[in-house]
Length: 509
Image (cartoon, rainbow, N blue to C red):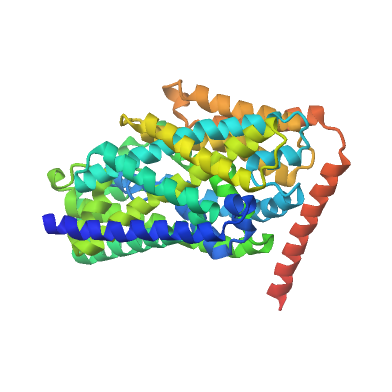
């Protein structure tokens, strides 16, 4: 057993040194604020796609989803369906326009500054409120990642929870401080490749281990045939099941408002490359979620007959990796889980630091924050947010998964409707944008305090819909023609038409 730990620790050390090295390399390429926050808008479609996937999925993909399917069956897979569809639509309808719009509208580099510029808000309230929403939700989100890191080291190596949390926090902060957006994006590529490789090989080798696909299916049916039914146990199907499926699918709505995902669209080299990015991203995501689900099913066939073999369902991926592979390879599979946690943490830290400096502090100062000062202030903000999040995570919180779902709904409801409308509806006003963000955040917060019956619907659904209605209603009441807004909107429409025409011309040829 000790020799296994040695091999696994070697793999972890190699991975950690690789991440820090990428941070140092990115530091040498980071010359100004645009480089630190958006990588100079230089991401190619492959890098952008894997960066989106890695920063999005976190440890949920390798631990949470396999554990849920292992326990309850394929009915838990609807959340993966909702997320995959939502990610595809986000790349299709938002990515190219957001890339063009943010550059055309004052060359904005954060979502709050873009929204302020898009609707020409002179009150600065959109920027402040949006920055506060990001700061609040992401501080808890970062805290959840630190908790996940502490639990990971505790369950994998027997390390004390707080030591594990401090280790992962230190490494992430180090490479985020050094290289900013480029470091986060480059490490995301490595982390994304590690995740998809692990989720491809572990279930494939697992199927061979149980004797083939036929034996896998028969083994699962021997445990419980309902596990393979995406609608659960037919005898228990009813309103509660329908509500659960709808709520799971609604996770897909959250993509339109996630700042750490949207900022990748803003950093692509040009709007036309969003198409290639979409293809890379969805292939990566489809393989990953299918691998996670299959891993859970292999786990059912291997472990479910004897619960003592797998006391923690969320460790099914870890246990299968250790069972099926040499300890050194299993160590890299463990590193893939660490990669999933770290990639999301680094993205959240970077976006939160930008919210503090660009969207809140900058409102109250006339200093030029696109200079070296702005870059160092963001590095300081990364450190401060990490320390606060670490304090929140110091005592392990057993509701951390609920906090992740809550933050996802909060961002999706606060920003999702106004981001969509800003791309496609010229009549969106600053009053409608501000009201929608506040309503989305408040509804998500209030809905979570309700329970039973209809209120068991995921708070994303009421939060998103009410935010959308408020944005449209208030904007229609307050709308006045603004030539500057119309000129920017027409420019983006023209870019979209040219992009569409070039696609048709290429198809005709």
